[in-house]
Picture (tube, rainbow, N blue to C red):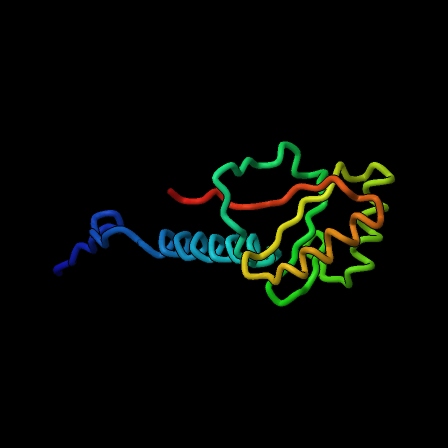
Length: 139
C-alpha cells in the first residue's frame, strides 16, 4: 500500500497576497481625491490683481472677506448677497467687535465700477478702513 504524502500547508509557495495592499492604496487614493475636492469647493474663483508689495494679513480669522467677481456679484465670506445687505452685515460685524475689519478681494477683470460702488457704500456707512487683497506679481 502506497501512501502519498500530502504537502504541508506551509511548504507551498503561493507568493505574497497583494489584495490587502491594493485595498489600502485604493482607499488612500479615494481619500485624497475627496479631501482635495472638498477643500477647494468653498472658494470663489477670482483672478486677483498683481502687486509687488503684497503682504498677507496678520490675522485672517477675524477679518471679513468681501469678494467682487468679474460678473459684478458680491460675496461676504463666500455667501452671495446684494450690496446693501453685504454692507449692513459688514458694518454690524465691525461695530459689534466680531470682526477687526474688512478685506476686499476683487477679480482683476471685474469692472472698476463694481469696486467703486462698494467703496462708496462702505464710506457712506462709516467703513473707511479696509484691506485690498492682491497676489504677489511674478518676476
